[in-house]
Length: 326
Image (cartoon, rainbow, N blue to C red; front, top):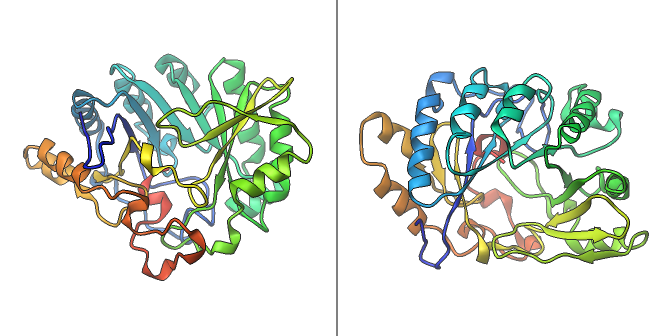
């Protein structure tokens, strides 16, 4: 088992397949023209499988595929097929654009759940945020997942002055659809021009929602990042990920493998461990993994303060979100 110095056992691995994406969301990518990692420097199919099996041997029971956009990789289908054979729960976070293209592989892989990143229900605002015109396709592909009985969640990054006025519209989607809407507080990463006054907090969200709905909290598991709420008569539910206003680091069981094979023990960690170079050199990877886990900070990567209003992004050492993986 991969246990850190604070007694947290890590059984959830997030694997980024690529830092490439077919959207250009301003809060994720630092600029429109972006130099993506050459394919040869990315983990290859057999390397992803080899590393994943090693983590499974160490107790990992859940793997989530992320990006960038994981489905833009030409060999994404092969990766999905290989990982689906492991004794794990397989999940994915996607922007939803290529779900229809990859549906046979998605169905065959028996994903436990798929999260679709969608920050607005308005086509014109979708274009402003993503700088691409794919709204109709994403909405159709969410319906496609629901039609095939795949547990579907929508990740909405809530940004004050950008899209907080749509929270109730998203909640309304849960009335007839067995879907979970996940409202995520806006987080700071390299190049995303984050400021504390853009954070729409958990308290803000609940106050907004409870003006219209009677929302009841659901039980929270020891490793849950999202606090879920139900509304009587709704087929689905909503949840809030309060990374900035109410961090949940004490129960963290997650580790991240970037597309270029670096292990990050926290989304906000300044350091990372190069597993891919060691793997290609034939070195023993397990001591590197264990050392990385042992170095995990108590909370927020050891960089951020729990009072988000005091965070100075000028001193933040991290990657852009797209190069970390969601």
